[in-house]
Amino acid sequence: MFKAVYNWIDERLDVAPLWRDVADHEVPEHVNPAHHFSAFVYCFGGLTFFITVIQILSGMFLTMYFVPDINNAYASVDYLQHKVAFGGIVRGMHHWGASLVIVMMFLHTLRVFFTGSYKAPREMNWVVGMLIFFVMLGLGFTGYLLPWDNKAYYATKVGMQIAESVPYIGVYLKELMQGGTIVGAQTLTRFFAIHVFFLPGALLALLAGHFFMIRKQGISGPL
Amino acid sequence: MAKGVEQKMSNHEGQKPVRKEMSRRQFLSYTLGGTTAFMAGGVALPMIRFAVDPLLQKKEESAFIKVAEEAKITNDPVEYKFKIHQVDGWYESEAELVAWISKDANGNIFALSPVCKHLGCTIGWNTENSDQYVCPCHGAHYTRDGKNLNVAPNPLDEYEVKLDGGFVYLGPIKPNTRV
Image (cartoon, rainbow over all chains, first blue to last red; front, side, top):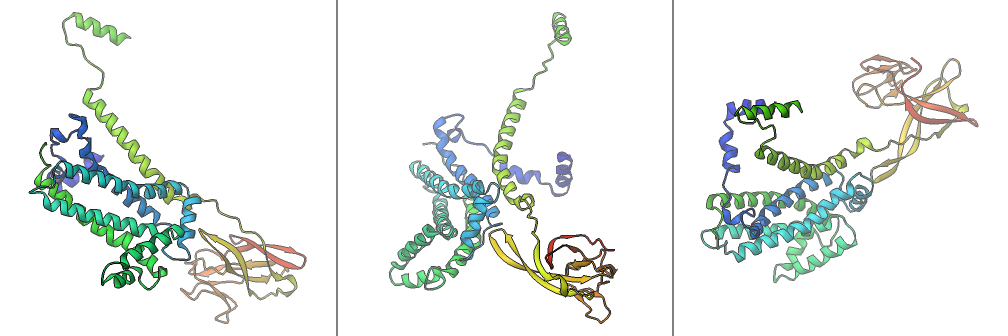
């Protein structure tokens, strides 16, 4: 059945070379944990991506119940956490995954740094990786406000004060991010939009570049 | 057992034994595939159950609500509004419902739902001076018993009616019992 469907599509579009290009590539011995156990450090990037996929999926499901509105945000989070089946699990995946993705990304960065993998000709991939790092921090910062509880509110206030301390443009930067002069209704909708549309879009584009460069340049050689 | 014996005998005749076990590759792909499916299921199932939760939530039966004085009900339908406590996820409100209440020839009080059975607009009584319920959206007409005359496929729904102490109480909605 599956085979027949696949063949039907393949006859028309010749998709086999496409996915072979993506999937069929050799893993060099020095990055394969089956050969050298210590090579597990080369898995951190893949694990970061794996958790990112879980973040995207669980986030999509959370938006089925969440409302980015100051009157309803907390109530809707409370509802999905306590009244909806597996709400604690799905929100837990997103909550803990958010921290884990930062940890994994940090470990991945350390590995790249200590194996010298950022050196020529891979400098651009390091730069893209750093952009991904900042996008991830942005996702963490904007997502933190969304439950609209005390912790979220004051964490964002603190973040805004930090933004305000930027020389010359700080005041404008703060007001732009807040969408007004206080952390309030417009901050919440703004952060929601940034959290679910702008930053994920940027993240996917950067990840595509990150992966394209790995395939184009290959994995860096053994130490 | 018989097969084993056969194999042994064939061994004696110098033929290669036929191995019935799965190959190492097959075993590996089954265990890897099974583990992958288990882990993917662990991620996907909670999210799917989370998404279909509204389907599986227990529906609340609405209680009977005092709507009108029995003595004031006439043979002509009159619109009565009443409030029910509605819980919609995290949003609780006093939602306003409407019933068209009247008496039939035998003096039985009945209450019709104003929701058109065509596509759910709200009907009105006698808006065309024809002693009929009329829906403004697509022109469905109903008799005073709620019988569908055109456009709508079914008669108007009824509220369950309870009379107590001279007052009319309305309960859950049920299919029309009068036509």
